[in-house]
Length: 294
Image 1 (tube, rainbow, N blue to C red):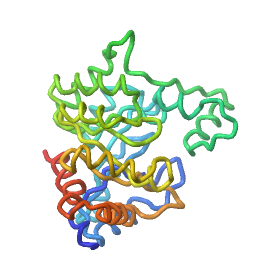
Image 2: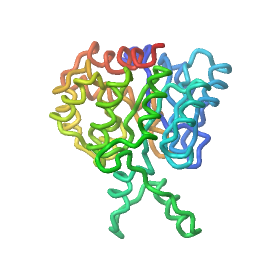
Image 3: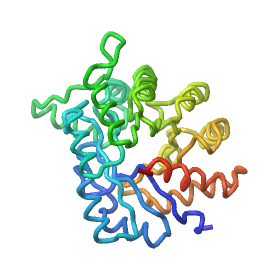
């Protein structure tokens, strides 16, 4: 069964070094990726461009394709086309729209509930507030229209033919970005976390987004941490069909498994639900490989 991972990519991994504690650093993970037969993984940081790290890992462990990326949170200037330009020039292949600083994400997480368990990044936000350091939230729409900064970012993504991932934008923002991106020549789009509570998309919405050529991303951590029932994940994947889906893990948390372990468990559970090995490999090998192609 482990051979099912041969040539697979995990396009959503939180590796170290990072501000937050991580289970592994890039070198340890790259060795595991190589040993598992996987092709590579994408380094996701909420705060930094990871392309330079990717270049070093690829030099040291060339059998693992470590994919650099950037998330457009305030630490890189938010919706900042120059940051995207420099990330792309240094080898980044994925641009996430805002995640931790998204107005949509913050409104769900910081909802005033004193009993709510906060993610680690939210604790960092609160620590900074106590030090009088405010992090403005980000919305890519103004008066219902995409901001000029957003259009500039989309154009830069199109220029380098890299992946646009929607991050934790609201549905209104996501549809506006995806429609405009398609118009402006962006050919590689991932709808991030389609079954995650703060970004949850209906099957109907996912089908509409798939009409623009977008892939729906399902992550291991979402159902593993009981943020969504696995039956819902299965229903969504079945409705969209594997041709429009990528599987990833979102792993890196110190108490969770390694990405190769998580991706394998994800595959096994889906096969127990009737998905074929071909279906799985479409979602972990074929579709990610297409997205990463030059």
